[in-house]
Image (cartoon, rainbow, N blue to C red):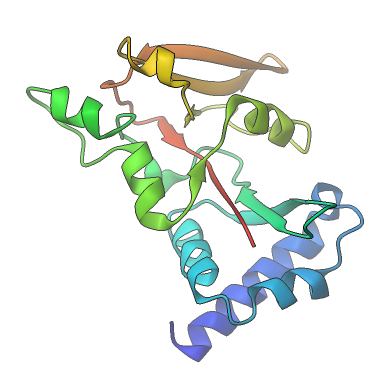
Length: 181
């Protein structure tokens, strides 16, 4: 990453951090920046999150380790990460009309993790997300072995968890990711 790209990314992250202080009470930007400075892997992941419409922001800090958690906080599922089936097995199982990729595969390539159902619900306590879209979430292996995968959204003021065939994909379904630094 070029120095100017790094500075632009950090400036965008800082601006979002300051605009949405309710997401990270008790965390100072200086702590976040100190964790990001020199962490080229995390910066590359955050750059990809930003480039695909995720609008990453700080949502917490581990009291024991000090690790800071950043998560996609775009109002809707990131626009550059939609129309994906769940994982590579689902993509391989499609005989025709294959999507361009999978949520699990894209997250791994970006160096981030899909949110779990619990993390998705915690994010929804910080704001209202996925009012018009939905997001794949990490699916327990026992459910995935049966061919299904989980996704979530927010409708009627509530968070809903649903299941679908893992090979399905929709223009309004993407995924949200997170990373710790």
